[in-house]
Image 1 (cartoon, rainbow, N blue to C red):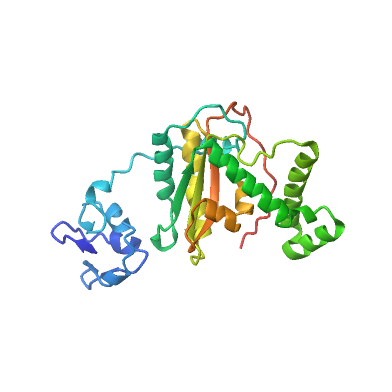
Image 2: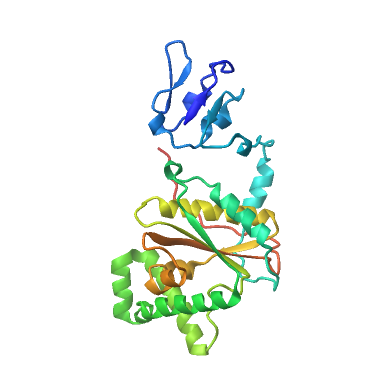
Length: 284
């Protein structure tokens, strides 16, 4: 529950204006008060924005609120974002557990709908487990329907069901697996990465996939600043509905596998940024 120390309060109104759940309101003299305590989602915004520390939340320990450091330059953020690449060549070097724990901590700091924070994480470092999981992924993708994409009827069916853009992506998955099977090449599902972070969320939460993407994006950017490389594990997500895979990962029946990202030290660093396609933009 949120409380306001009126002896400290300056009536600046910041806590009320920043409250996303209408928990706080103004009295006639502009004094803030807790109008709907049952609405509070414990996001901590009112505590963090108060300039005189007059607001507290009994569910959020005060010592966990850390002063915000100075702003980051536009140039530094621009350079960080433009240098992000999907890394698929990793050093034979494990990522220390304390670094992975820090990445998970930052993933958990990502925004989540209504501050539910209901996503969970699985960190896999065991090479044998990753190999077994990769085999399950390939089996699910190929025998789950991908092997039929090579036929004309299969391509037409995929296009009718998923549209041009998604059918192109499915076609690339098919070529990837088919060519490797033909040449007896290993299918590089996790690209020999030393660690894989899997994100799962509540099956009935329609915002869970968005929450998962936000969490993984935090891992991507933070890992880059720490000299690590990352890559989304797209094959695993494409096969995420496999009961064999969810059982292998010991996911509860009420949870879905929503995202996964490989983490490791890159073998090499890119020397240039890479251009992107021009996107459609409408101004209204």
